Image (cartoon, rainbow, N blue to C red; front, side, top):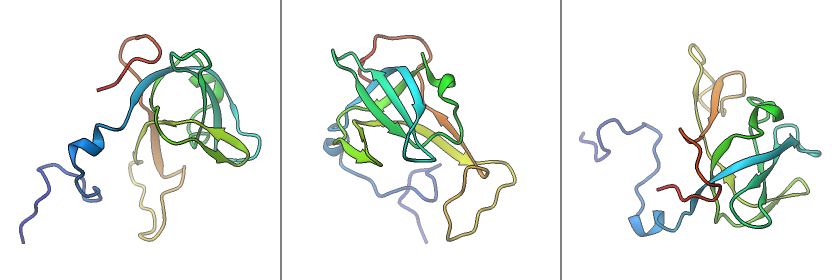
Amino acid sequence: MTSTAPAGAAADALPSIPYDLFAKIDFRVATVIKAEPHPNADKLLKLTLDDGTPSGRQVCAGIKAWYAPEQLVGKQVVIVANLEPRMLRGEVSQGMVLAASDLKDGAAPAADAKPGADERNVVVLTVASPVKAGSKVS
């Protein structure tokens, strides 16, 4: 059997999409101004971001198990800026903070279950050097 996946592609990779669809995603750099636990969700942090716009934005991120709020304040993170806003447990989320995750060494979650916080590493994507809030990521 031959594979059409590129060399080094992850076994659980999603199908390819056309470039035109990918080009519609607006990746931006945002600076975390404020971070606090979400008042109605155990796994979420509520982040106030400077995204280069006059009013900024609020994003709810499921990273509470890996980050204390004070660890994020001042960090520049990568966001999906044109994701349709949605209500998450009574708070509006106006985008998505990007993060990478993998299994911790020795972790082996059940085949039919999503790995829990004690089995995964999660790292918020940041920039190597400071840039202006709202800078495009390409």
